[in-house]
Structure formats: C-alpha cells, structure tokens
Length: 392
Image (cartoon, rainbow, N blue to C red; front, side, top):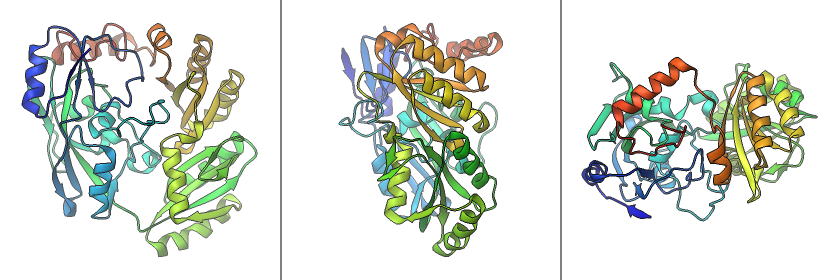
C-alpha cells in the first residue's frame, strides 16, 4: 500500500486533489482497527504535520498541527500548569497496539474521544474552538478561530469532530484548555454490585462537591493496585478546597478510603485509557453510552453474553470486552437499544467489522442529511470510504 506522509498542509491538499482512488486517513494509526475497515490503495498520514503553532496561556487557548502527539501537547500545557479539559484517552493498549507511536490530536478530535472528565468538562468536540482541514476535493477550509465565541453559521468544528476522517483531513486544531488542579484525591467506595456502585456515583455527581471523575471497577478488575468491586469519585482543585470537600463527600456516600497524589492520578489515567479491561488479542471491544440508571440491567445482559465491563461517566459509559462473534455483537446492540443508548464497535477482527453495523443505523431523515453533507465535502468518496457505514 502506498503511504503518503506530507509535512505541510499544502502537500496534504495536493495529495487529496490528485487522488484517483480512495485514501485511508490516519494520524499514527492507533485507531486503525476501530469501526469498519477502509478499503483503500493508499494511506495518507498526518504524523509529519506536527508542532504547536500557538499557545496563549493567559487566554487558555492552544493550537497544534494535527500530527502533534497527545504526550507532546500535554507536556507543553503542563509547563504552564494547564491541561486538556476533556482528558482524551490513549487507547493503544485497548486497541492491541501498545508499541505504536502515541495518538495524535487530529486523530483524537476526528474520533471525538473524551476521558473521565467528560462529566464535568464536556466532550472533546466542545473544546474545539477552531479547525483547519482539507476536504475531499483538495480545498483547504477552516472553521472557528482562536477565541472562545467565534462561530456563526454551520459549525464545522463539531461536524468534523467525530467524523473519523470521512469528511476531511484535519490539519490543525485550536483547543480551549483549562488550569491544571493543584491537588487531586479520590474516594474509593467498596460496593457489592453495579446497582450499588451506580447509586454511590450518582450520589457524588448530584452533590455540591464538584466531582470530576465517577467510575466503577467490577469484581475481578484492578487499576493502580486497587481491586474492584469499587466505585471511584474524584475531586480536583486547590489543596484546601479538596481537603474541605472530601470528608463531606465521604459522609454523603457512607464511607470509603481516600487516595491522593500520584496514586489517584495513576488510577484515573488507567480508567481514562480503559486499561483494566485488558482484552485478549482474540477479543472484541465495544463502548456503550446510556443512561446511568440503565447500566445495572445492561451489565447483567452483557455479562451473560460473556462480556467483561468497565464503567465510567457515572455509569453512562460502559466498556465491554468479550468474544469477537456476531452473537456477542448482537447482545451489545440489544443491550444498547433496551437502555435507550448507543454503541460503537471499537476493536474486532476485520471479518466482524466488515459484516456488522459498527454504530447504530440512522433514521431515514438523518441518513439523508448525512449523505448530503458527505456529498458536499467529499463528493468523490475519497476519504475513508465505508469507515462508519457502508457506502459513505
């Protein structure tokens, strides 16, 4: 397969404009096994399109080329005691490519991946202030800008975020960032089952104590040396603020142990990256998004189908690892539908990914709108065709 690795936005545009066959679009390829396999004779990677182009710490804004890696971006922000609000994950281990180069910011935005702080700081797409991209005809387009209120008309920033490279090749992203907390501490609450865990998480999230992480490990899983079944509630802020709020949160949920500092950070990094799931090479991985109150019933159904679970976002996000079969996939779809939620097939053999719907089908009016947008931005179907759905 031909590999294109341009180092400039202009070169990206030239490659796309000259393409006579479909292109597979990726950053460092860490999510190549996600959703449907792309049938393409050439790959266009943005890994050489890297570097921070703007950082205004006092305005909480940073711009970076699409190939800039997550660790590089985090390191630059850490120098100014800042961080990415949405806490985007590094899913290399989950995707079975632990030795691959780190994920890029372009790939993370294209997949709209957010971590535990999603419950407090919105999705990654909500932190995208501006975006530059090359559409399917080789035109360079931009949307938004470098200030917090800047969008009029169609918000292409949100449209490109989560499009998985099917609408354009992202070349640069401008993000809203936040101040990094001085202190972090986590309340570890032993629980008997998912129902008890969701109750503890819900109590914390509906409290006035500013919880920024709410996850649960079932029995048989561990993270940062802490074994489940347990619910985790995180507080972040100035040391005095965390010290004031934590005992009150602990009293509200009925007890638990408090961990802080590096142990707390290691725990949430593991949850962010879904490391406790530890899927075997032959297993598939799904992600469900549903109402937290529906998580216990979904967990029972998924466990009956052979799945192992990790819950985040107060129970609204359910990671599942299990047999890579159509039967297990059907059980995931059924559980998502029964809970009024959605699903995505994150990792599976190509044969399964090509044979099933990897995300829910759209209702006809929405499908027609999706097709029109695809035709407007990529009329010749050059960019990641079939990545999300057959024919698109």
